[in-house]
Image (tube, rainbow, N blue to C red; front, side, top):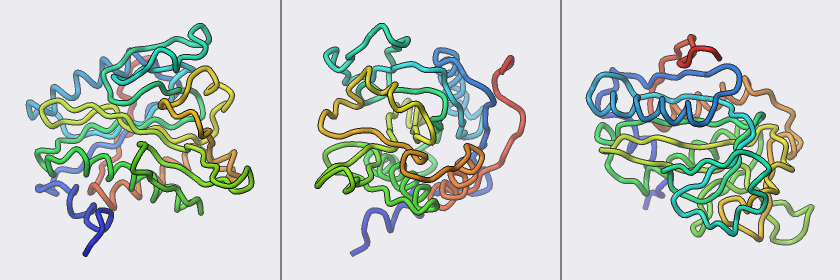
Length: 242
């Protein structure tokens, strides 16, 4: 029997491969509220057939976001950074410089209307990206995201290296994933990330992989295409002033 991962490439390639996913990288730091406004507009345009699917890569200034399942008790230091309530699934997470956020706006009606498989595909994308840097990322049935084992810290110790939080409107996805490249890990201490108390947070650089953001971006695009299909790079930024 084929595993879920074995079927992902066929599952999430579009029915019409002639329309590649737009791939954009925003320079500088993008404000969170500005990013959400843009996603709302773009999702509406995708639903109405006025715009292509999009993967939008950004970095944010330091901030915390609260998903729809966030518990107030997990916000340890509410005055440290701005806190934004957002409609994505999940709990509290941190965004900041050195973390690659990928906002993924795909039309699942063109692919497959299966949210569980979509989340698994996002996990597989991140795991494949980490593998390109010789890092073994793993998924867990009881917690969303991508995890790495840290035996040097003790038996059974795991750290989270990437987070996932999505929202779907009329089968078009938005929000997406965040991969820790070289963020300030101490900034995560103001929250209980994703409500998980017993595990920590890490990054590629913390794991001993001194990569640059452009190197990570290139690998993310390569592995995305292997699962979700072709992309078309557009150089100009989406937001003015960045």
